[in-house]
Image 1 (spheres, one colour):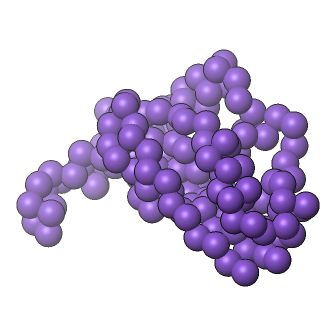
Image 2 (tube, rainbow, N blue to C red; image 1 turned 135 degrees about the vertical axis):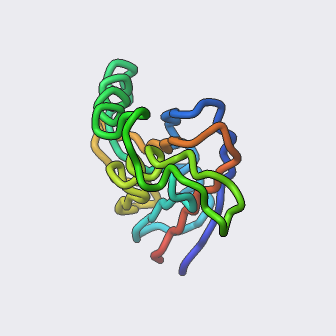
Length: 142
């Protein structure tokens, strides 16, 4: 059996980390899958999905690290007029940060529950907000 659900997230900041673990857990619960795998993926190229410990100080450290890796004031080829969009691309750092965090994660489903470490939480990472975003949660199993 395969069950695909989506969730809409309204972000409020240009760069933001949102803990979406409860959304993923509920999707697995609602799927009826007892044994299998869950895939979580974002549909956007300036957002990410990451798994990490849910601590405000760690979120701050990750945000600082990503800013050092892709500073806003950098010289980027993507920050130019894009005729196909009819506007100037102003989000090169969003693409780069999303590339670093990745756009998906996977967990094993056992006895209807996600198997994860005690400190593991699923985050949606916004790098070009605020915006309306969509994540897909696919549960595969029996």
